[in-house]
Image 1 (tube, protein in one colour):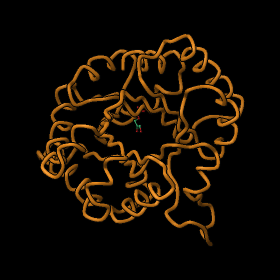
Image 2 (cartoon, rainbow, N blue to C red; image 1 turned 90 degrees about the vertical axis):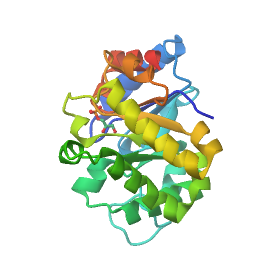
Image 3 (cartoon, rainbow, N blue to C red; image 1 turned 120 degrees about the vertical axis):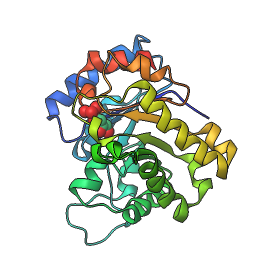
Length: 251
Ligand code: 13P
């Protein structure tokens, strides 16, 4: 089922006290019925998952993680397993974010391993795809995102997308204040959905697709008005409760 979904990606931000302040403001807003979004997910840095789990207990806000390692356990110093995320009530996990792909050299193959490992633990992967500025200028946007998507489909199979979310995040729009126009975002979303439809129409019709890249209170509505955009993956603006709640309200 396509769901209107707003996901906060806090990235590497926050301190214990800030987590408490931010969550309490978001909880108040959600409880007051501010959000039109059917589902709101908070993805804090992993070290805060226990705190977030406690502070969100009893609220309808879901918890997600930003990353994990595909192995179940082992000698992987500094890593966290998907099974561990489950213990902190996570239901979603971001996979293949461009910051992971670019800064930590994550390949399509590794992204796919993570996608599969997440699903094995009954976590819903939020698979991120997106092109660079140069790729866009060379007219390669669609080819790039389809290649990233195809890499996962080849290994995981199209059926696995019946329980996954896709996030289109053009790299040039992340943290830059440059947002894709609603038309630019819609064009790529439509391309992704029709590519899936060629393989399985039901999955294509039902998959939730998010846009990410400088989504703010003042541009969210126009993005959400697009037929193939179901919600947002929000970075910077998710660190400001009022801004984030306005985005949730627009979904
Ligand atoms: P910004 O909203 O800060 O551009 O970040 C987008 C993003 O990368 C969310 O995953």
